[in-house]
Image (cartoon, rainbow, N blue to C red; front, side, top):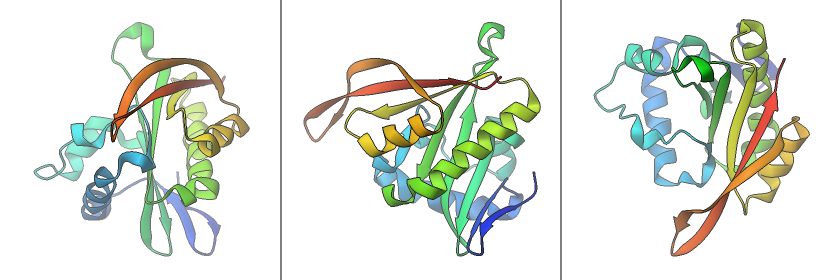
Length: 175
């Protein structure tokens, strides 16, 4: 997939080795405030301090990461993770991380759309899942506008500052 310019200051593309330092800095910033990460993957489970670009690609796969760059600044990353078991290979779990909630529309929305297109092109992933905290209504509406539907919830599985939140599970078939 070549670089995709949506307008003069927004580019969505696959990473290359020159991006790795920027990815490490981005992940360091967003792990301080996990509110701007939507999905199953927790960046704290992917230590990048001693890792290399090749380690990152080995973890996610070359086509399973997209970067969103605004005015030359890495502003979003979307990753697609899969389970190795044969019965789950058709399902991808999407995680989107943004510098700010304000970037969900249009950057986050476009990054999710591009990842879905990449999945369709490969033909392996036939269903995409994602998760969102129950109080993030704007994010839920954006997911619905992209064709995702609510499939269930995990009650009180997130605790932030002494408050419990449920996680809503969303899915979308892409074939």
